[in-house]
Structure formats: structure tokens, C-alpha cells
Image (tube, rainbow, N blue to C red):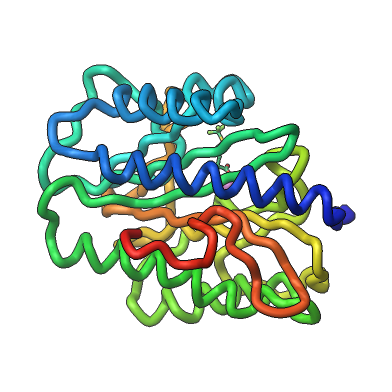
Length: 258
Ligand code: MF3
Ligand code: CO
């Protein structure tokens, strides 16, 4: 379907929604430590979102029971926070969070190390993050949507990792999920032509092993089929006349931490 083009006023609201979510993620990242339960992560995230006057958009979305998706190790995305699921040294944990500010949504994900992790796990986190930046080199007016997909695929494939195919990025705005869908692997078609004012959530989900995933009986949690580690990195971006603007990072671009 049609991809919405945001007005100058809408872009200002999306910027604010993104800026606040960047702050939430920075605080969550600082709080992660061994012994913390995934439910505590969710409680902190919920509080941070509400304290800045925003609404958590994931809570009750299609019945999802929390504000933050907390996915540990072989969990790819949509892990449900639990009091009895404690993070331990050596784990990796993916936090996916989103909020609504004055009717406009933001969505972003980060994968963090819990204490000291293996070099292999760190590489998976780094490559997943970098694949987002490789992808958005193509997030420019005049390029096509699937140029982003192809760039992510080309970069990740060099490492032999599996790119999750069952879940994709998406347009975002007055809804969490808008058109278009944004696959993280190469496509046959070119996809829509990118235009200034489009706002997109680009979110590579990368497995250390194969690309296949299972959906758990809890109705939400997605895990790697082969039990390998998985990482996730996502930002909400704005297509402009030049470089894409990353809305869910501290203003001015790259955060030094993550
Ligand atoms: N970033 C996730 C996505 O785009 C949001 C999780 S949706 C929820 O699908 F249902 F888990 F809240
Ligand atoms: Co998303």
C-alpha cells in the first residue's frame, strides 16, 4: 500500500518521540547487570516511558503483555519479561522498546552484553549493529526500499550469519506498523522509491547460526531453530533530501555507548 509522507509538523513530533526513546534505551543499557530479572527491565522501561509523559506502544499490542520485549541469547525477539528469568553473566539480551508521543510512535532495539561475554557473542552484536548502518547508507531519496535490504544482506552474509526472514522492519508514524515492510535480506523486486518525509523502522535480526526460527507456545517468543545466539538492532529513521536522520539516537547522531 501507500507509504505515508510526514509533514514538517509530524516530523517534529516523530523527532521528539525518537529522542525520548533514545534516552529510555540509554538508561536501560546502563541498568543491565547480572542478577536482574527480565521483569525488572520491563518495569524500569515502563517507568522511564511514562515519566516522560509518553505511552508504551507495545503494551497490549495484539495482546502483548509488557512495554519492553526482553529476549535473551537464542531468543530473537518478543521475549516476554518474567520475574523468574534472571540475566546472568555471559548472556546477551535484546531490548526492544517503543513509545507514543502526542500520537506519534517511535521504535528501537539494542542488544546488550550482560557482564563479560564471549568474543563470538560480541562479534554478533557488533555485526548486527553495523548491518543497520550499512543498510541505511541506501536510505536516501531516489534509492529503492530494497537497496536497504540488499545492503544489510551483503554485509551480514560476509560473516556467515543467518538473517531472520520471518520478521521484517516497517514504516512507522501514527501507527507502530505502517507500510512498507522492510526485509533484511535481498529481494527480487526493487521496492518503493524512497522519498523525503518517509519514516521507517529498520531492524535487522541476525542469528549466529541458521536463519530459521521457531515461535514458542507462549504466543510471542521467537527463538532460533538451532539454538544459536541472536541479536537485534533497530532505529526509527527519517528519509531526507540527504543523509537519513536517525530519530532514535541522541540528537546529533552516534551515541558513544551503543
Ligand atoms: N519492534 C517490534 C516490531 O516492530 C515491536 C514489538 S511488537 C510487540 O514488531 F507486540 F511485541 F509489542
Ligand atoms: Co519494529
